[in-house]
Length: 127
Image (tube, rainbow, N blue to C red; front, side, top):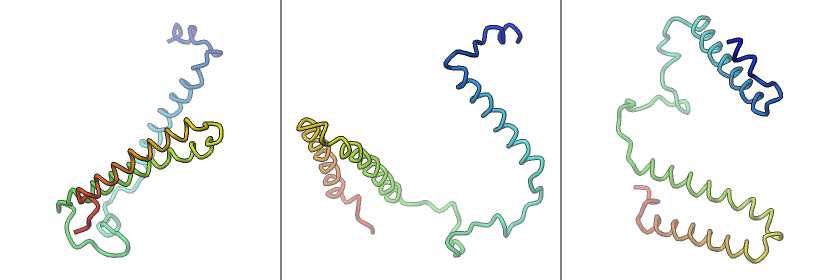
């Protein structure tokens, strides 16, 4: 261990990253250990019961959910993330010039084609 410490250069640009990693690991282990030691030991059925929006669930958690819900969620995330690319483009619009405009029109065209494809396939229909 002393041989390792003698080779560590505190002026190394990666030393702060290593230090943060070591601190994060130590804190994570400490928090998990402390919560296990100091946390509640008895199980309370009412406290750990499922509670959503003030309404008790009608079915158990083992009921299968339609793939349609997951598809809608994935499509939302996809279009939401791709719309995030519009903000940097809007900020740099004047400096990008005609090339940036054409590139964004192509990007939006591909995005629109994907939306039309999903719409035609009926993935956005609630039934």
